Structure formats: C-alpha cells, structure tokens
Amino acid sequence: MSSLWLWTAATLAFTASAVPIIERYQERSVEGLTNLTVSSATMEGHDFPDPSVIYNKKDGHWYAYGTASGGSNLQVATSKDFVNWDLVTESDGSPYNGLKDVPSWVDPDNQGVWAPDINQLDDGTFVIYYAAQKANFTGGPGGEHSVHCIGMATSSKPTGPFEPDSDAPFLCDDERGGAIDPAGFRDDDGTRWLVYKVDGNNFGNGGSCNNEDGVQKTPIYLVQLDSDTGCAQVGDPVFLLQNEELDGPLVEAPSLGKSESGHYVLFFSSGCYSDPTYDTSYAISTTGIKGPYRKLGPLITSDSSQPPIEAPGGGDIAADGVHFVFHGGAVTVDGTSTRSMYTTTLDINSLTIDNDD
Image 1 (tube, rainbow, N blue to C red):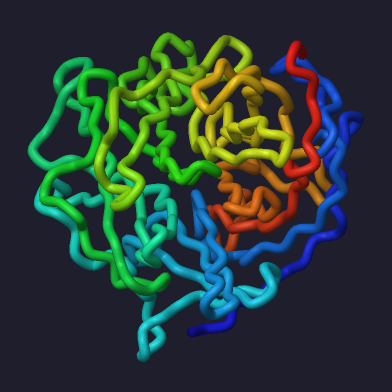
Image 2 (cartoon, helix red, strand yellow):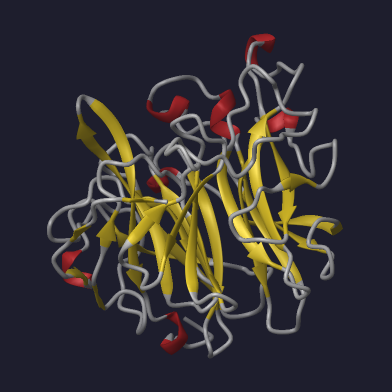
C-alpha cells in the first residue's frame, strides 16, 4: 500500500441556513439530516470518483472503492479510522486493479468501469456491483451512442480480486440510454435490493451532461435481489423518482439507507458532475422501501461547507447509516482535473419525520 497525503478539512456545517437558495427543493429542517455538523477528510489530489464504502468486522478496517482511473478498473483504499486512508497498490507500487478480468459483454477497447458499489453477503462473500460499457452496441439518436450496463463480481476478500459472476450483464436499458450507478442495500428482514439510474442523458441533446434541456429522463429504479447470492433479480424494477425541472439535467448516484425509526432515505445527486451546482440531495419514504419518495435537501452543496467543496456528489452511505463517502471536484493537480474522495458522518439513525409530512 502507498500512503496518501490526507488533508482534513475544517468542520463542515450542513445547516439549513448554509444551503443556498437555488429553488431546487423545498428547504426544511429534518432532524438527523439537514441540521448537521460533521468533519471531512479527502484523499486530496487523487482521482477517486463515485466512491462506495464498507466496514469489515473481521479485520476492523474500512474499505473504499472508486471508478476506474489511473489504469485500474477498480480502485481500492483502506482505513483504520475512516479518516486516514491508504491506496492499495501492487508490490511494485503500480495501481492495484481489483477487477482485472471483465466479462465478455464488456467492450474490450473501452471498458469504462464506473461507480462500483461494495456489499457483503451473509456468508461473508463480497459483491461488487458496477457499470461498464457494453460491447458491440450502438443506439440512440443517429444510432451512434454506446451504452453502459450493470454487472456483478464477487470475491472472498474485500480487496479482491473480484471475478465476474456471469458472461452476461445483469441489467441493461439499451432503449433509454443504458443503466449505471448501481448500489446495493440489505433491509432489516434480510431482503436485498439494488437501486440504479437509467442513463437517459446519454441520449440527450447536448449541453450540460448532454441533457441541458432536461428532455431526457434519468429515472432511479429499485429492484429486489436474491437474498443468498445477491446476484439474481427477483421481480420487476420499481420506479422511485426522476429528474424534474429543478434538478437540472439529471439525477444519479442513488444510495439507500434506513433510519432506526423505519424511514428509508434515498441519497442521490442532481445537476451535472462537472458543474458547481452538482450536489448531494436526498428523498425520504415513510411508507416502505418502494416509496413514494419525497425529495428534500439539498444536503451538501459547493458552498454549504467551509472550506468549499466543489460539486460534492456521487455519494454512498455505509450499512450503519452513519458513515458517508462522496467525491468533490475539481481539484487541479498539475493541470489535471480530479474528483477526490471525502468522508463524513451523518445521523440518519436519529431521523424523525411525521408520516403525513
């Protein structure tokens, strides 16, 4: 492993008064979410977009996973305290690749592995859900667009290497732009679920994230998984929410948590990842995992923290409902734009909200 220089930010105050009025969502105070005082740390200068995180009770370490960068399809970092992180490397110091072997459905010339999400099954197996570019496919306007699909890979160790579970993608939505940003969730009753985004802006009309006019929808769906393997679909996907006028070009990066009071909290990002208005928002369901979900927030914006974190999004909530990771960009190092990983803590376990709110 190579130690990464870490910068610990000053305290971030995510309070209702700190959130800018951009007419994005109804602004309100919800105990445990909107009124927060949290600390943050980042692997500054290292490109680690769309992070996900898990705590491994067996060795007492945190593990984080990031989108393909620097020659690695699956980046892995570790921490003992959730603040100081080490990037996993090969013995010669080169980038470690936790997903060296991709299945045959992935384009060999442009694999495009995005937004890996880590989960642990009841038998101890680790499962990574990820999106990758589909081979031998073009579609959309003019028949010129490639698409991403969702795949799965497993390992007995949190660092991998992860091996694909199938030669076929788990889920695609070719006609609407593809499927990306998968994130797993285990409910209290042992059922397993996956949330993901339909990549509608992939078929957009250009501009901000290729969908500046917002014509193409980017819905977020929920699908049940087999509880034992976490790799088989049970039933049809269920619509949760989608981009509306105030969201900008898209919503994406869903991550599902649950408070001790039984409310489901769906974190997501809105806006374009390369624009300062990109944020971390959330929606709440008081009536079950399938919703309906009411959009609230935003929770973290470019100017709701001190010092500012530009375009904070692509987040993931840990299974404990407390530890949260997200990326912030664009930090410029030697002229290179990067999205560094930040860590923080939330308190959704003390979330209280009236059922009729």
